[in-house]
Image 1 (cartoon, rainbow, N blue to C red):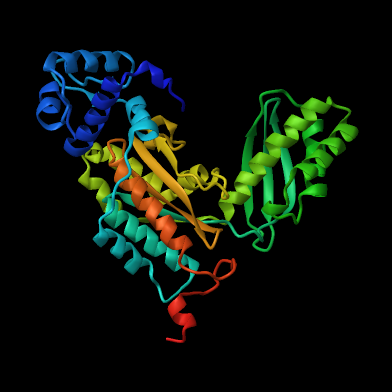
Image 2 (cartoon, rainbow, N blue to C red):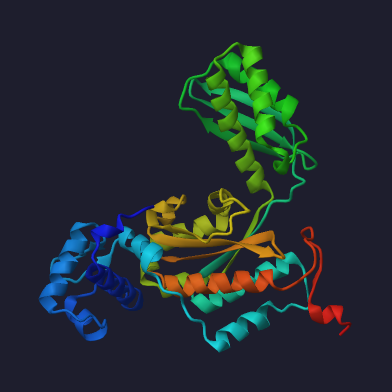
Length: 373
């Protein structure tokens, strides 16, 4: 999401920043009096109130009750995260704790991810998750595209080795015929059986488009769009197949007033326990992407998380992605601390070994092991 930063003066930015940070700390609406006394805002109460009213008009703040102070809106949190958040300076003690908890003498990739998740939850006081990436060996040995109506069909996939069956419902922005979907099945089986996710590339898709066009006599653009949408669905399914997600600190949800509603808490826990929706959401993130991803409120793909924040980052060991770590908490999250914690975890893991990239499950040794100790 982008912002026209020129709309906000430096004064508005400082007041918005103070309100977000005060609300994170207090969990209550923030008034002008508090900002004057505790927020180090060097303006009069009338000036602060006027600026707060304008920020509310711009959509950055909300007023839950007429006589109450303001709270940040989803837009306000997003602006804070993107433009205002300051780096959290971890203390020497916290940095030492990270090194100690991650210094596993002989640790497999799963153990590294498990430890990282525990550290993240403990240091941020939020629920943490780790995701192990899919194995590149997963392949599909048979496809069947089943026509539903002019704008949708189902892909049935039989997974190689396990013979498990997976399905994907594909929605189209254009109409297709049963005959075209039948020909699509033939093209999928011709080009994509026994192919790993890493072997799906543009060249292969162009060959599939050409084959479908020549077999069906349909418009070239339509065939290209159909192949693109279909391969994207297959890619996402294969991406989910090998992913394994684990959570740490679910009980920490109870420590935040946003999850005091029993019905809401049960739905959140149900979504976490079923894992499928969250795996689907985080699996869409490119494994080669080094940027920390922040999904605030309605930006989350999982509907029940529409007033929560998910912060997520891929983890690398010696430059190779071994998994990912994330934090789930209320929109009223200590973003600065969470972002710094995740960054430090990422740095520590990437510096754990100077060994060449290893396949998942390979034992990773520390320098201490190499010295024969």
